[in-house]
Image 1 (tube, one colour):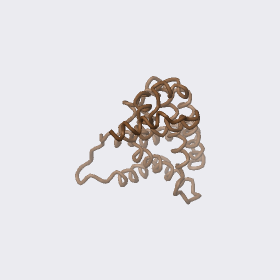
Image 2 (cartoon, rainbow, N blue to C red; image 1 turned 90 degrees about the vertical axis):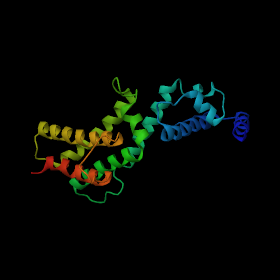
Image 3 (cartoon, rainbow, N blue to C red; image 1 turned 60 degrees about the horizontal axis):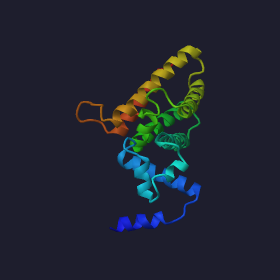
Image 4 (cartoon, rainbow, N blue to C red; image 1 turned 180 degrees about the vertical axis):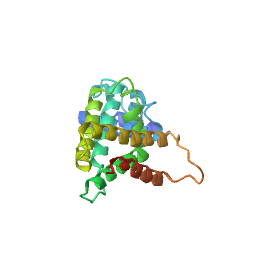
Length: 206
């Protein structure tokens, strides 16, 4: 009953356009963390923040546009945190930190990560905005690879970089879906992530 009363009170409050847009984004992010992106709907979000079902469409033309805004914010957050805790100036250690931070982001933001990498935004080919965000990440990775293995021919470096990325990205997806099995006692996820990154970096051993 109290919830219904609160909703009625919210509906009576005027909302500036920018305020409402941010409210929708915040509510959608919280919803995705709680339940995943699959069941997000404009109607459910409007009910949660107490506005009419038509109000969200003043800021997002459809559900896909809303999900896209959240996914892009996820990429921004991931890139901003990519080198947190990395104090070394040694290229290999920078790369190691970047990869481990990517795996930590995937583990700590499992449902957001699924929106960014597995949802309808990417299944039939990434949306242009998603593709641009992913390209930014790949450019950063390749720039680091140039300093990690400057002696390798460009083609060979590209092949090894792709192999490393497949190992790390595949690990993120499979652990998020609880698809990796190891002999008992099974290592903790963080321990396994450290070992996987160490093995992947051996691709660039002399």
